[in-house]
Length: 120
Image (tube, rainbow, N blue to C red):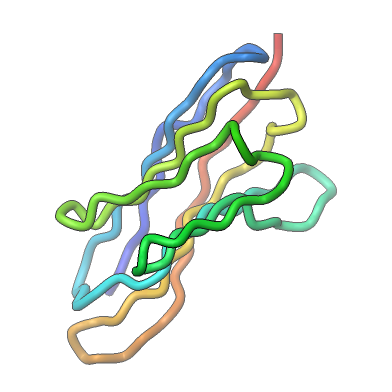
């Protein structure tokens, strides 16, 4: 089994910062692309930031210059540093990863989500 566990969400004032973490565990042979998505109430889930195995990054226009995605391969962990947070960043943030298990089966996995609320 493979699990993705997010942490680091919470309540922050506008202009503040948060750092989300997502740790992958289980029978992992390799981790390919990792990404963060978010879903606000009444809206569709959207891609926030993605990081490929080649270290290429992709960001939603709404977060460019404010959010940074990074990973620690030794810890099988991906991070999302969020600065200058705005009320419109309020959402449940989900970690997503393409993982090859020891069985050599490649599959896509989701974390359970972590709530980020930006409010004064």
